[in-house]
Image (cartoon, rainbow, N blue to C red; front, side, top):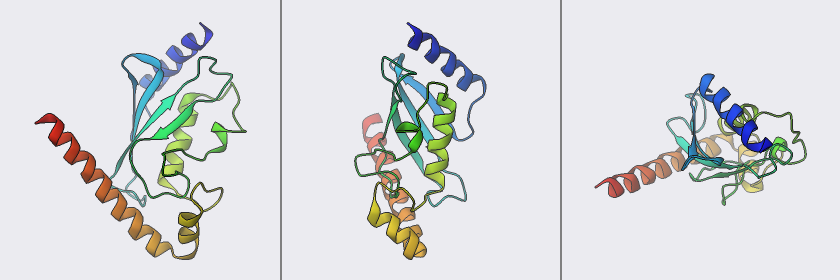
Length: 159
């Protein structure tokens, strides 16, 4: 019951003070499953992209960290092919006092500002570090291709 009250409060706080360029809603009104979308910043390598991810909260939240899985493919050193994101707050730096607004803000920052440090994808991190121009071109291409794929799938479903 404690988890449910905490999640209701966290979601209410996020709805009352929304994070810019980040959309949050529960999946099928289940407070333990959130569907989120980050709209990439204009100065990000992913500008123009909308990146969807799921945030799953354990039954013993806030004593255990949520898990995050990106549903939109992204060429990013900190997000692997399966959609897992590498952020310390979801691993060894988790504390029950960390709010979900903070977690979402960290994820948004990580997406918009890729870093070769602490990567999930070492090859992508090496390219970012050694050939930033090629990294940026590949990130832009992936963003364009996977966003267009999502739009095409959406159009087929709607028709």
